[in-house]
Length: 114
Image (cartoon, rainbow, N blue to C red; front, side, top):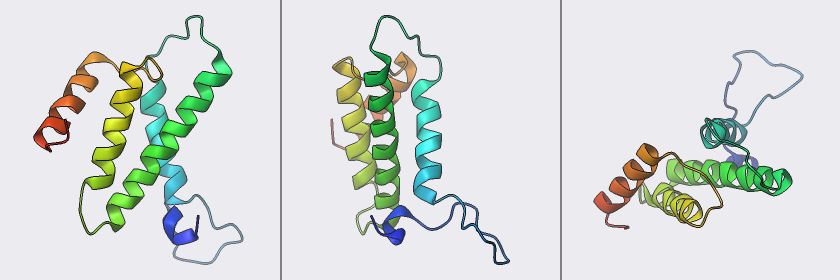
């Protein structure tokens, strides 16, 4: 991915530094990941598979958010990511609490993507 596709710096400085800092893609992924894991129970799942799934989902959402920012057709990337996450939830891959899943379904229906 090019630097532009990764997004610019999440927290740019007004003066030069040795380190360039966190990219916007990484920031978006970190925020998405915190939502994915909040309130989850571990149960009897293979944690390495669960962690990999969460990481892929978080970066998938981050990529959708970046695509949304650069899109000529607003909301297309985010709608696709939301639909994919709901599909993963319904197939037991990713856990989403019921109120969030319900809001996501309503948003997809309103967008005509349900």
